[in-house]
View 1 (cartoon, helix red, strand yellow):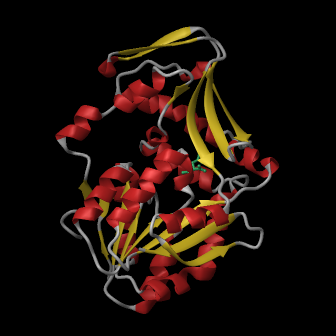
View 2 (view 1 turned 90 degrees about the vertical axis):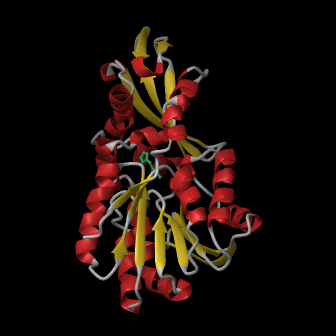
View 3 (view 1 turned 120 degrees about the vertical axis):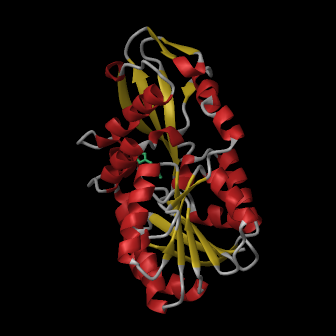
Length: 324
Ligand code: AVI
């Protein structure tokens, strides 16, 4: 077993000092918002794994079906010796890529990265067993921390992948800055593999985010539990309801928690009191649905040259391979 399975990136003084400032900013705004990264404590990451297996939640299955078809080609095209995955979670789909790189038989390093330490450590341990010849090291930190780290540790034969359409959880401006940071983290010749959810009818989208078993509702509410333990809060989960709608004009799912009562909660360590009127909501996530052509133009504008694009037969999901 390697000496350091998971390297912690979020241990700087600045990161600790800033922890929770985004919560204060979001909850003192009108309308209220919270950053989606707070979904992912260990329990939230487990719930997300359950979402991925839901019959209504098509993205994971669809992306996996594309990867089954094209993973070998990606491994051949890139010839990479290192794969860094942003927001790796359990790395389940990524195994299709790892299998493909294993077939090529070169020495290979896989670097899964996530904000959730529990799931990261478990997946590194599992993968180390499944791929004993690979060098595997997790990075624990936010996307920004990870990309800053990558910039300081360049590698010639590196592919960075960002699967599952997690880019869709960034509003356009933040998405733009993220792409700039991704480009900066890549050396000329490095590859970037991006998985994106494509536009489709509301009748398919809304059930995917309002599943019948209530797992997405539990995932959304768990953000408040996470804030309660992280910042000594007293949010009462029973007074909030989950709902997701598709905003057609913005081509995005919007997920909210609706408060049913006039009530005030506090987050002790942030020295914050938050007052709700009955019916008021917190927007916890947007999930943008992309137009493949527009996105390709955007990537090219960020100096990410499109090498190849794959989709499924229904054109529900896309995988774009770019080169810096
Ligand atoms: C992680 N991300 C791409 C998921 C999505 O579909 O936007 C998060 C999610 N939220 C509710 N269901 C899944």
